[in-house]
Length: 457
Image 1 (cartoon, rainbow, N blue to C red):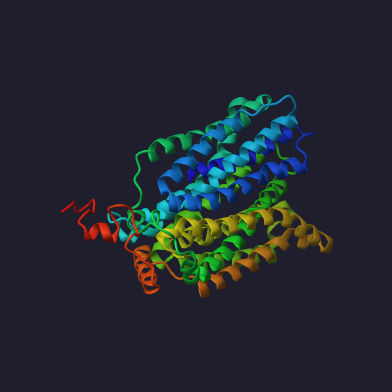
Image 2 (tube, rainbow, N blue to C red):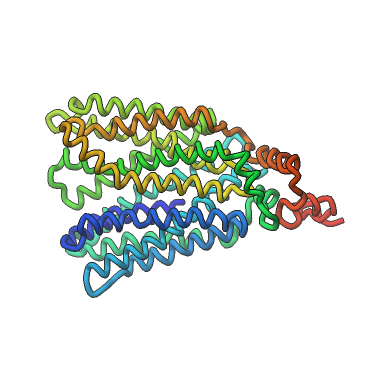
């Protein structure tokens, strides 16, 4: 997930640099499209690779996604054209296709990581944190490192060679997927997938939806709200920067971008242990409620925290607000989506649906927040600066309620137990479960003595 996070985050500093190089071309429309086009690709990738992950295999899905990110990250770095607008159009197109690879990693890579945490050789007390480290923690580190790489390249090349800087940012983003692609060639499918996939038999979708629709809907709603809040809240990085330095240089803008993204890291690291201690459900509720408390505090004490241009108190509170978001939904939405909302046989598709609905929330939030803030602007300066925190905090409380009421907690070996319950549920409804699993792992093969780990009779 590090390669996905870097590819996704790198467009932020690139957008800033292109705006300095081509101010007439980088209009508000072009900047918005360049930032948001990846959402369209991500949603397509999440939905399409959910099916590929379940019916073709986790490994092949991961290999295709990594290849897409690698190829289109290089092509984006090499974008060119006779005019700046053509160059920007090339970047937009390549970002879209890279987005498909990024989106496909959710139902392929994340699901495979979740299933691998319940392999027989994994310590049961570490199952949840291992998943968090492999997914959200890597994403958060990647976001911070993408901005830091931009700053380092700016130090190296300077303001007179900004073309080398933005191309270098994108080109470096091709290294992690290349390394990952090589490593994944030697990976095997997770044990859970081998034993419980329906790759060679029909998935009974009606029975699946009847059993899991409430969990799927609950996780999807909370993911929608989380992304609707989280992605647009990046605008407050600019609030902090402008308060400290009214006219920041590019060095200062990139430095603050690195710092703001670093605020996520303590939350995801600490939260990974909390998920093992109290379970993902209650870790998520704890993070949401703490985020809401700090959000309401930021709103209520905003004038005090920012009086006389003093921004340190606001920056610390804002950092804690972001960290608690990672301790809660940032870490645990992926855990709940991969482990709680369905069986191994359809996990990729159900995860992809929930994640895609989340990205729709991000897309809508990115476009609606400016209008919401404009409405607050008309009312008062205070509401202009704090209104979004009131909205975000209220939605965090709403998400906590949905999680508490509708989503089960994840215990040790939860997926193993759920797969067995799903088999029993299918059998009780007249479905032939003997062909569930990969060749050698089906009940029929095991009964015939053809299990690969037990040998043939």
